[in-house]
Image (cartoon, rainbow, N blue to C red):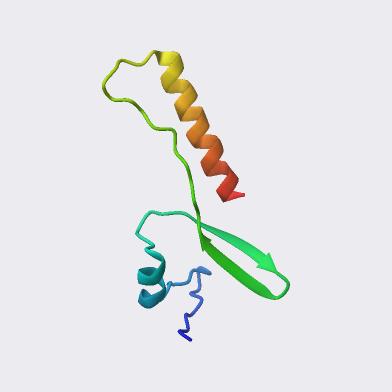
Length: 78
């Protein structure tokens, strides 16, 4: 079982073999959950609203898609 060390900023590095096995890439989000005395870290399945770039968007549509993305991100940052 690979080990990782907590830095003075309370950060950890995910071992390469774990990152490769789960396909974790830089910039992706992970969910963190406490289960008893265990920390469970999972690759987050975030669904971003897609944009059809073949058409024009109204300012209202752009604002709504931005709002949806911010709501989704805030769920994972709580």
